[in-house]
Amino acid sequence: MIRDILYKFFMLTVCSAMFCGCRKDEPLQPSVSEPIDSAYIGEVKGFFLLNEGNMGSNKATLDFCHYNHASCGCMLYKRNIYPERNPSAVMELGDVGNDIKIYGNKLYAVINCSNKVTVMNVRTAVRIGEVAINNCRSIVFHGKYAYVSSYAGPVAIDPNARLGYVARIDTASLQIDATCATGYQPEEMTVRDNKLYVANSGGYRAPNYDNSISVIDLDSFTEIRKITVGINLRRMVQDRYGNIYVSSAGNYDNIKSNLYVIDRQDRVANVLNVEASAMTLCGDSLYVVYGIDRNHSAAINASYTLINTLTKTIVSTQFIDNESKTLIKTPYGIAVHPENGEILIADADNYITPGRLFRLNRAGKLLQTITTGDIPAHIAFTRKELKTR
Image 1 (cartoon, one colour):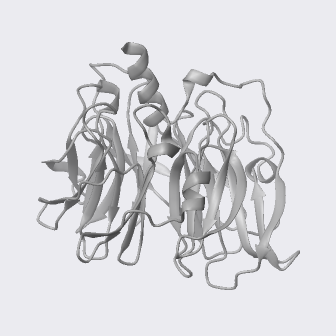
Image 2 (cartoon, rainbow, N blue to C red):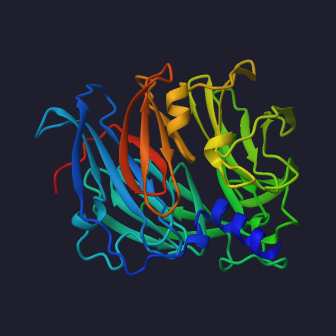
C-alpha cells in the first residue's frame, strides 16, 4: 500500500517515475535543430516548451519552435537550447521543470526540485538571474510582481507536512519581498479582482488531501478566506468572464478527478463531472486532457474534452482524431495556438525516454509528431523572435 501511494504521488504530483529509476550518469543531449514544416507568418513567432525530466536526473530541458526561422524560411524546432546559450550554468537548467511563463521581456522557468525560478531574456534565453524558492510549483503575474507557489517542505509524503506559501517577487529586482501562507502543497494560481486564487492539493498528506482554494488579498498580501471545493486541487485557469476552472485530481483510487467552476462570488457554481489532468483556454473553448489511469495505462483511458466556457457545457468528448488518440501514449500537457487554433499535445510516453509533441489542426487532425526532451509538459507562446546567440 505504501509503495503504491508513493508511486502514484511522485509520478502524478511531482512528475517523476521513480519506479523506473534515475539516469544521473547519462549526459543531456546537445542542442539539435530540425526543420518541421513550411513557415507560419503571424504575430506569434514561436513557443518555448519546458521538459520536466525525470525527478532526480537533473534533466529539465528547454526547447524552442521557430515559426519562421531566418536560416531556412521554415518552421524549425530546436531541442535543449539552454546549455548552449548559458554555457557557464552549473547543472544546466536543473531538476524537474514545473512551469514556464513569459512576462514582459523575461522568461520564467520554475524548476521544482532545484528549488529555484530561473529568469531568462525572452529574446535570447540567456539567464538574467535566479530566485531561490523551496519546492516551487507554479507562477503567475500581476502588476510589478510575480507570484510563485511553494510546497515549503522537502519532497516526501508526510502526514504532518507543513502549510505551503506563495512568494511575491519584484520583477525588476528579482527579489522576494514577502510571503503568504496558504493551504497544504499549493499548485496553480490565477488573479481575479486584485485577489490571488491558489489551488491547494495537500498531496504530501495523502490520503488526507487538502480540498480548498486560498484567496489572498494582493494589497495586504494576506489570506482572507478559503473556498471548499474538492480534494487534491491542481490545475487552474480563468475564462474571459471571470469564472475560475479548477481541477481536482481525486485520490487516484475510488475518488475520481473532477472539474469545478468558481464564479465571481467565490461559489462553486458548477461541477462538470469531467476528469482533468491538464487544460488550456483559447477564446471560449476550454481544452481538457485527462491522461492518468488507475492501472497506469494512460493511453487506454485518456480523454479529450472540449468545453464551451460561455455556456459551461461539453461540446465534444473527443476533440482529436482517432489516429492521434491511438498514437498518444501519455497525454501530459496541452496548448492551443492563439492565432490559428493549432492544438499541441505533449506526450510523456514512459516518463524516462524522450517524449513527443503532437501537432494537430483546429479540427483535431494529426499534422505531425516532434521528438522532445523527457516529459514534455509546459508551453509558452511568444510574440518575440528568439535571436541566434
